[in-house]
Length: 517
Picture (cartoon, rainbow, N blue to C red):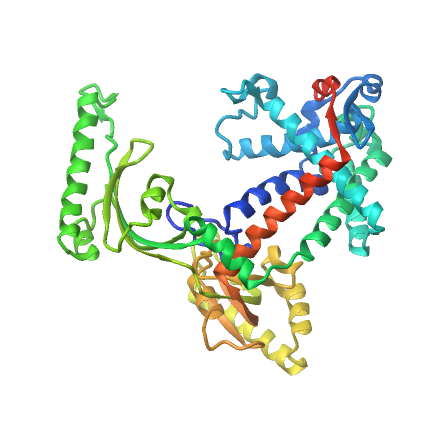
């Protein structure tokens, strides 16, 4: 991908450019839920994972009630799709190493999700399945009451999903779509039933989006929200030193590795603490952070992170409370042991405040440079060839009329950034905190930038390198306003969805335990 986000040390590096991450905790929590709920619209991609849930007979599925929603009883067969998709969602995450307490090779009912509550992963997935299905049914009912019809884009989504299902079926050697679906979801699943699920999912998504887009907030409301959530929404600036106190195993005379003793570990911890305390005393006495950090230059056991900037909800939980204390002053220093016991943090607080940075909306076409096999970077000649192509395309666009519509056409024909092609190369609300490569961010956030500005930007820092053809759409809101708007919107959506499902009524039946049996 083109302008990759370079995440700060705590977050790791992402290889692809994607839209700005949701900033407020409430919005992030809702987004996580919707990722789960609306995976149902992505129907075919993870469908084979659910083959772990094969049923031998549709008789039982079609007759045993699993849940009552809006006075209507839905059978195990009706819920099997939702369970399968959510099961697939979590097991795929576990396989990718994103979930620590779920072994993707073991059944969900044999693994604990919450030891204190005695809840297994199957219990949790069942809860999520009911939640997803009830929200979709509630949204469909609301759409019918309001007279909402599926858009043409929604109809196209349904067609594409059904076409993908047909292709996936053939790719896996099935003679019919129905035989494929029965293998994955059991004998009760048919093509017609599957298409109905897809249609309801799309209608639900469009109805939710329609409601969300109608929500508006005044500056006064956003300011009040900010004042209530300063600790999460403020931008915190600080310096940090990390002293690694792990002990490397040594070899004995036989060449075998020997684990460090408790005494070795305690000595390493004391050394790290002594170094941190010494640095703290120097900073407390007025020394400049960079001067103190310089004494550890080249020391692989000390990580230096100067001039860090994080929003409150992104802060390391180890020192978040300390930094969010209203009594905190610029220059204050603390020393804390890492929660994993592997190191010591020294943190110097610099400042906190509302982020007034004006964000930007831009479009881009990414022209990837060729790269020799096994090479980390293109050669200068390969970069030059990509730039020449980018300049030629930009010149042709200007000659053709230089409109935003023509730029979008160029994106669709030429851009190597597949993630943004469907959106016309658009990236919204870009800020300096997002972690786009520096050249991309610097161009987008140039205060002299005007609507319609274009230019070429080289990208040498992402997994795929080359040149961006940039188009400046417009400035967006200040970052804090976007955060407040997003968080308030998420809260209101969550409350609305809760009201819809409560109004509809949901009762879980004992038969639900037969899902995935």
